[in-house]
Image (cartoon, rainbow, N blue to C red):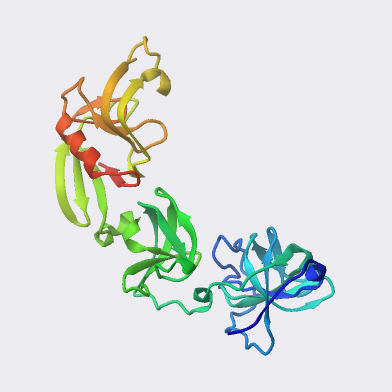
Length: 333
């Protein structure tokens, strides 16, 4: 176990830390801003041998990384606040730093650093090789950890992702616990069973909805690639069609009052409405499109709404129990 030296405020102006810049000089986006192509970018290097106690620092705010101890040196890009860096040495007011996350070095103004603690051991571990590489966007369906290494261990967690968060994904790997994880474009990892990739629905093991707006309009519920239920729905019409694309359930209201004033249609004007006791409403857009019980019409499978997907009482009640905030919805013709 290496001894650890904590920086003092007196030495902040003379600290040298080494920063790792991934591939194109960027580590996770939470760590680096993406610079353009740079032929002078440092190559990733293995963890440095330790002959003396390691000194650790954190960035106090967003800081620019340079190829040498001067602001006239090549700028590699920016590193965000609260990034842990190892101190290698100093030269004047500049710190030479090593980032154990991206395994590269750089220079940074030493007054942008503060005392730090040793990072998680998972940061220095080599990630497992991908079992499948691709480029696709996926959306988080439940609260999910964003980890520096594919493991459920708390010390590997770098943050928590909320449902409805979109991610750029690049690969599938097998985690430390044997489960599947996705690698993000920033080098982080997220459990595969908590991310829905529209282009790879066959890989998803959770619950999701497919909505076919062709007549008769139909909502089909899936768990993984298995169909669970299917039912007709009233779709939008005229100038307010049901939107197409990939969405998730954003919020749910068990008993809603719907007022056309809220979407720009005067309540007492043409096409206006004021509806109470609209049960089992599950919104999937910020401007009001939702799945809900539609007691004032029975045009199942046909146009007739202001963009929502109207359901029977039985179907809307079943869907209320089955779905949740974050459930993906793929809507298409």
